[in-house]
Image (cartoon, rainbow, N blue to C red):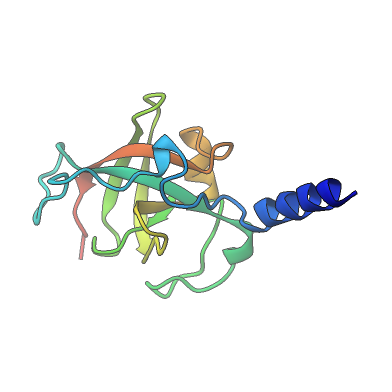
Length: 145
């Protein structure tokens, strides 16, 4: 009986975590490789590699850091430093699928992650199931403003 209760509590905790995976528990959850970031990325060349995650329903309709409302069905993303409006190609290093997103928010706030994708963008590269995936980021278009 105690074993079953412990298993139920662990299952509930995993569900409450959503797509979050504790740092270092899966190969995809490793942080960015040393030297994988550059100060001024050039368009068309990968400038950052690391772990992507996603966010969706619980943030849908809320204001993003840019001031617009988050739409989980739009191809958008949160990045800690890129200017709002920047377009970035996100390529899965696991399956090779790609999606172009527009940066409209700040994040991710989980250790070892480089970008948070909207639900639609995560679906486009097959990220929904695992919740995190190693990716490469390529600048497509700098901030138009």
